[in-house]
Image (cartoon, rainbow, N blue to C red; front, side, top):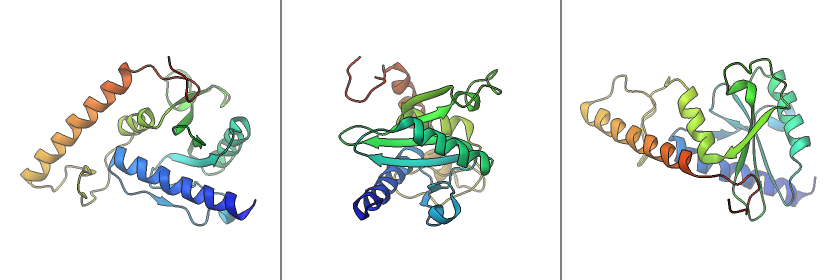
Length: 181
């Protein structure tokens, strides 16, 4: 890989982390040992093995194969987050991890969606475990041990998240970036 490709990859990881932080309100970090250990590119989403790709052209089949192999080795659910130049972030998830009854389906049955829908899936699947001190415009991770003011704020955030999820559900998503439905 050239130095510019490495830089583009690092910048892509940072950009993806910013977007996911804004959508989920949780602290995520780059995995600086990923090259040596072959681990998830982004840490902080328990259960999901995030592979982040930023490129001029898509190589989805190869990227997805890599994400699946590394996720299996780390007992995680693969999530391929990628962005092609001048397009929005897209996410590929194995259907077996999303739809009841598909638990034994091969990883070749996958779903491609937007980053907003991926965040909604995470919110639905992810238990609220840790209590993080909320930053401005970020939700707390749990209501345990929070003050009444914090709980009111948490309810406001949940209502905002639910409204955003409903808005996303009503939108038609193009399969390829740049296409209008």
